[in-house]
Length: 269
Image 1 (cartoon, rainbow, N blue to C red):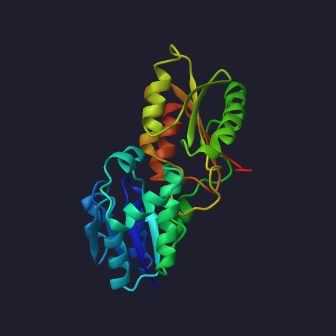
Image 2 (image 1 turned 45 degrees about the vertical axis):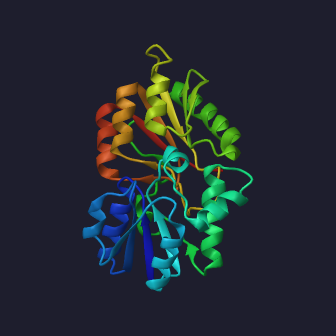
C-alpha cells in the first residue's frame, strides 16, 4: 500500500521516512514549507511542498498519487498555525465554519475534509512503534520521593487541563504548578518556569490525555528535551507509556543518565 507522509518540523518525519525506506514501503513525502527540513527530499522517491493553508493543493497531490491514507509526522508550531496561514478557498471555508479556533478544532476539521475526499489520517507513529516509551523507569536513576510527589501532582494538573487544547506539558516544583505549556512549546515553557523558581528543581510532566488517537500532535521527547532540562534545573521527566515518542532514543537516554536525570513512563490511565 502506498501512503503519504505529511512532514512537519523536527526529527520525527526524518526518522519515519528512513524507516519506511528500510521496510520497503512505498511512500510520498509532502513537506510543509514553513516547517519541514529539505533533508526529506533525499528520503522519498517523490517529494512535494505545500504551504500552511494550501489544503486544496494537498488534496490534489494525494489524489494524483492515488494515496488514500496519509501520516502526519512532525510538528507545526502552534504560533504558526495562527499567524502564518494564508488559507486557500477550501481552508477558508473550513475556518469560517469553525465555532472554536483552537488547534484541535482546526486539524479535526481538516481530517473531516480529507475523509470527505476518501483520504484517511492514519496513526502517525505507525513507522516508529519501537520508539514509543515503555512503561517503567527508563534511566539508571528512578525518581526519588520528592520527584514522585511532584510527578503525581503534575499528572493531576495535566489531566485537569487536558480538555482545553492548551498544551501537553506542565512544570512542577514542590507540588506547585509553575508553568503550563501553551503555544510556546515545551522548551520555552521550561525556560519560563526556571525564571520563576529561584533555582529550585523542576519536574517535567508530558501528557497525551487530551486526545485518545495517535493521528497528530503526539507527545515527543528527545536529546533536545534533555539539554533543556539540564539548562533549566529540571531533574525528572514523566511521560505516558506507549503514547510518547522518544526520538534518537539511545542518545536521549545516554544524555539523561550522564546528567542524572530520571525518566519514567507511566500508564496513561
